[in-house]
Image (cartoon, rainbow over all chains, first blue to last red; front, side, top):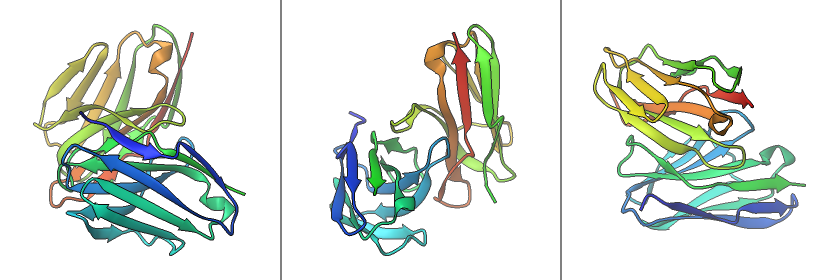
Length: 112
Length: 111
């Protein structure tokens, strides 16, 4: 099973809303990632968790807040987003940091 | 500065043609991965190459890892419309466990 699941598939939110993106994997992977992707561009790394601890935060604005409740789950809490934050948000996991990554289907986020 | 540069950035070809996508770096990688991504979906892992000079085939797709493990290529034979998508190389640099993505190649195969 190489499946990473993400919910919701689509999300439309206003700039004053608070919402959360969820990601789950049951492959026993110890590293999990959040990426932001604009159309036809490569994914941009936002956060990396390794063994449930935040190990990389790529200078992401504080309106994005990650959380890793356990080794299988990864959340991304969103608050006071801007229209330019509209993008495809991808979750990925790998056995260890630096190993090949497996991606979820993404959440298409639109901020109005 | 991008650690992994892909070329070409965009490619539009007719069904049945062959093509090659290149992924180059000045750094050595412990392994490289190739992904294909369709619009609105997550990248799907196609292959991982680990050994310098390694060649892997996946139906009409041939992947090669350079001898020095600094570059890789993806060759598609007799392209089909279903091959349309964004192709991404990626990997971890040899000196650490930071994972990098290439700049991407957007392929369109016209029926």
